[in-house]
Length: 349
Image 1 (cartoon, one colour):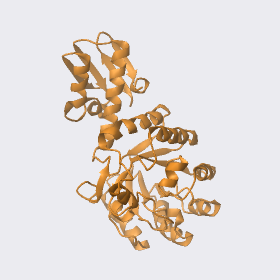
Image 2 (cartoon, one colour):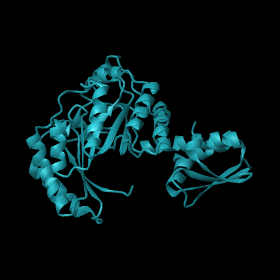
Image 3 (cartoon, helix red, strand yellow):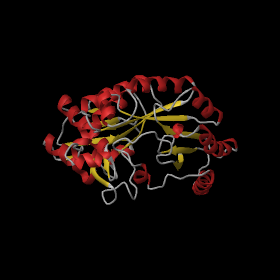
Image 4 (tube, one colour):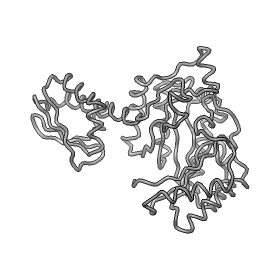
């Protein structure tokens, strides 16, 4: 999927019918709840002036629950974005919403204004986790709304959170496998962060909730990522994007946060896959040459060569040489006792 230029329109908590335990949209976005048509227009114009490439631009309505807003207000916002789509200046329109804020009337209206992608903030398909998180909907709602979205011809996005109250690896893996069955266009994975001024923060302070720490979350999320990778599901984000507020110097008080969180997870994924391969194949020399796609060289090496040094120590060898080669996303060419091209997904577990 080619890289898109995103025009983000934040609608924090506007229209959302309830307060999930983890949510403080004002803190997450750093914005107030007020937004007008002129705000939408000005944001689009501002970003259009930045972009050098004009052929792959997407307007994305983030935050809150877009389709829980009164339908007249939805239309006002969408009308602005649709105007630029009709002019050929915007190619896609995307929005995020709740699974229980989807019906025929809403989808007909979204179709009218040229919406392409609808992402559902599902978080979990375990009923206990949904209840403890005060999500306000049940798992059945997710299946029905996902089907309806696809029936109307929209691309379906699904968002998963790990480490919510009552969650564990088994429940998160169940959610990921159910997501695969729904065959989404894309998926996002977020580790739960504890933000100030939320119910989850109060539970943390009272000792009723324990957050996933960074180290333990990495393997947790890598195991989930593996399910999507093996089924060729496009994972467009892993971890929240750092902002002035979303930072340990800001409003994050606990949870698995890191500005390069995805790289940490993918580095663990590649290291684990390579170690499993070497143990199985015994394709080991004193020096090993590894070729990979450019972006995967840093994943194999790890931050400050941590992965590479761990593999060297584990295998009892003297050196690993990493070189870039035009390979597929998950392909790695290993030159040890013999030369072999492997798919890292075959060796993660």
